[in-house]
Length: 309
Image (cartoon, rainbow, N blue to C red; front, side):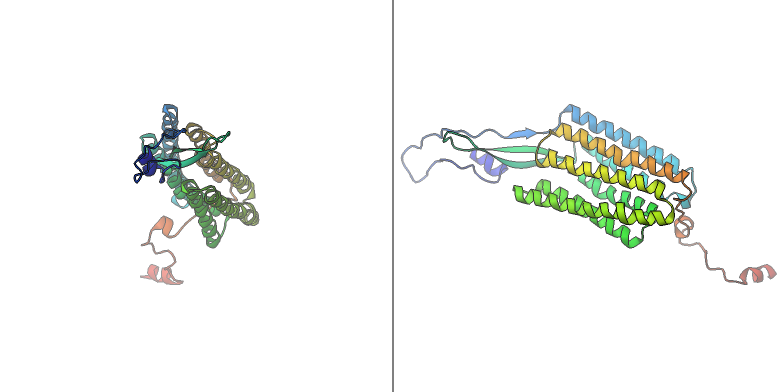
């Protein structure tokens, strides 16, 4: 048992042990250590992952079909939204087929009354790191869509993307760190990074959208994203950090949030963009014509000379 705790928990539980230098027999401890506790999803959780894979796949196919209906200069939102659900399709397929996760080793101290020695146990909780890879890739794309919709400058879009990346990294570090102070310290940093993202969306981008006349579409979408992302941070705290809910319940909670943050937001964005003339974003030049186009190379008088020739 001591060898197992040394390998899994990284240390040997305290208490009386054998003394190799003593010839006298060592009495057995009165309190035995409990075996490791495993916390992982069941068939219900796996089924949920398969359902999310199918929903993300169908959403991706739908977004591809919608993108073909519009001209290339107007496809920016459609293409990026398609990439978002496509990445999630890959992530959920990996998790549903048994990949993208590992066990996080948690050392838990158990206090007792009546002068009974404290006991210790190792909890092995299943953590889906593929979910964080998904968020690291899709969150910048979502924010690029919103920043473009609001008309933010490239500098501000870069700032908000870096803040969101910091939010995801610190959330991941909080889960895999050891010790309450370190864990909740990383978690507090993720809230600071999220506050930066929220300020850009609710204050900075909102003012820019107001000047462009696109506030009717952007403002409710920005508020919606902020509320949904608050949900991510809250669920992360009560699931993988404090272990307040089971892995199955965490799968369901994150699945609902992913549906709201990706397919639901994507349909709202692209369909609202189609109907809103003030929020139209056209990307011409290299985006639609390629690097070999001659747009802007014609000089005044050249057309007349070509015609005379």
